[in-house]
Image (tube, rainbow, N blue to C red):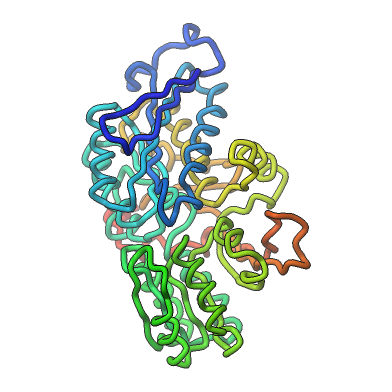
Length: 413
């Protein structure tokens, strides 16, 4: 059944309650789950530069996970709440505190915008509830800022930066210039990509920063062109990356011999750019809707609720992280964040969208990553037929080594 409600803040978008498909009266109550209700808040960018990557689609993905959990719930009910953090850490933390303290929310999922994610993960740890950072990219979430109640699904800046650096250096493109969004995501993308680039014998010739939401990139693009760098590395994403790529094409950077390296694009960004502009771009993602029969079937369900739009990796990550969390709550018989995360770590997860997933002691969800190349218009057979697979990167190679992140939780493990 559906039940919609409002909290005192207009930021809350709604509540949807999912009762299990089996009769509630036939199942014993779970002692550590008050009222046999699990409440999960989708905290996302609903109206800003990351709304197409997550937004309303993230809420749909969480609801699909709750529905799919129904037949195996053992009597648990699931409530999905949603709110817009507006890419502001203070707003994100205020929502998280209110959700936990006043509305009994047990986990927060999504969390695009690294600054918001870091702040909310700290709030959830204080309250012994779970942060499922499925849309946050900063590798600090599993490094210096790791928490015993945080799991980071999908990808991170180390995986994106290292994989892209390897791909570029393999083509002998060793001199880079960075265009970096000026907050935690951009800085950690640049840092992590630079570490691998330098280790491979490359060199950074310069960088320029731009605030989130910048629309005019003419100045940094001119600086990049004048630097003589072989690669313009875009340490941004969403609408910012789309605008930068379009303007780079207008400046003729490609014709002048500068290769664009997008450190974090998703399928929604490529769709917005169009194949004429994006063709040939290489990018690293953890999920593509057309990878196999299972991903296609789930994506068609998603698209039926999203006016035909196929899911991004962030939206797929919300589904998978939410489903894994619910199963862990059922198995642990607890909503305590530390207990649920320990349960998630206890055995490999057979995930329908990401394959085999293991959760490390630092909270990193490890799974395969993929290097894709954007198709040309002639190669594409439909609106969302956008990628061809270049390489599969095993999880043990895709993510930063466990001992290298500086997470205090790793000591002695």
